[in-house]
Length: 479
Image 1 (cartoon, rainbow, N blue to C red):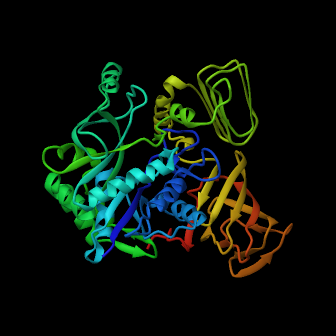
Image 2: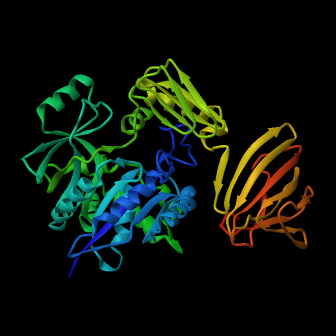
């Protein structure tokens, strides 16, 4: 019987560390920071390279948030990878419960594959070295070991946890996990030569993880089993019981299990020297980005003069920088960040303040993705709002009505099927329709090409919560 290998991609996240490009509703794992694929898509593609002779590489398991489910499916569809399942957490409970969900799914039917667990928001510069290291880790895990990837440090980094290893070569034992150190301690770790950054990449059998969690945190294991027993399935989506999962204690993999393993279980470290970075701040993005002769990195429509070691990321307009040193500038249509590279970790303070003030920039971009497509709020005033709306082929908005606004729709491209009360009409390019206040209506794309319209809203209140849904393809109507 061939050895089964089950990739597991942790795709949760709150979207705070790379604000304003990442938001709560569009966290960093779904961002395209360079090239034309997102970090999540790169993680999926990398793990496809794990296939080895005598092994059966399974379709990936994705663990993510309920609110990001259609982002996950859309980005998987673009990669051409069909997941084994997408496990949806109704609330965030950190990584230990998330990995338990993946292990229980992988163990269905009595199976016991080797799990290769990685986060969705990391970058790897040397994919060949990455695959070689993980394939070696798979062979160790097949014997019952817990294997964690250790990154050869390149600098005295204070933002990572460390692993103290014993032994030499590819099979080193984990002697201790160490919390994030101060600079002086990090310098000692770098000089010692047997300390590695903890990459939070784990390789172990499903049964080994389940047994370890039951041993060290039986409360988490028991609560996860209750949530799993109450699960429901909808196509590729698997949802643990909502109330049961909310009762699961929140804990990381490291705190729940890994830090307790040295001396108790067979836990090994696989050295990984593959240009790994977890992109924990804009400083890290600058570190891995291509740079000019002056150390400047730029993305988008950017002009940089007389500047050094600066990152400028533009998404919607020309951004120019003159005389900047060690600065980060990130532009989006609705927010701009300017920060010193040294303090880029502190962007979370801005996000926290936005949350306190209940400002929309903390959670949403101006362009908001929906299961059926997206809308972009291009202009607004006290009694009007203008949106560009794109509906995917076959996509449909909910059958809905508004108490406080009327709408005008103008078709820019594609074909629109519009329902207004008891009438259904087809609109072609340059045709328009008026939706009176209080009318029941729906927009659908019956064609094979994307539908784009301009929507002009007018009324006394234009908030997104002025929607009464009667029918919805995407399960957003309360039952």
